[in-house]
Image 1 (cartoon, rainbow, N blue to C red):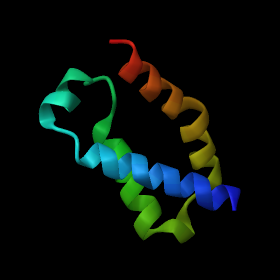
Image 2 (cartoon, one colour; image 1 turned 135 degrees about the vertical axis):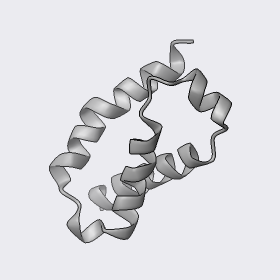
Image 3 (cartoon, one colour; image 1 turned 60 degrees about the vertical axis):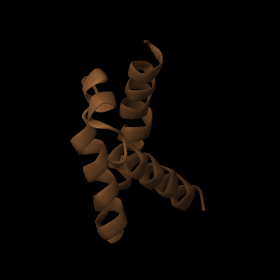
Amino acid sequence: MYRSAVMRQLEIIGEAANHLSDEFRAHHGVIPWKQVIGFRNFIVHHYWDTDWSEVERTIDIDLPLIRSALTDD
């Protein structure tokens, strides 16, 4: 259940990123928006191929960097 919940939250983050304005994305250009959205697309359409270690790396490394970039304005 934990993995399912984490994957779902990453899907939501990627989907939300896809709906942000170009201006917002440009203002936060340090965030790799295409990779965020691409990761969402991968886990939605190829969930059976998702490497859990990649998900853990995203949780441990990428999400804190994204959070910091969004809150350090």
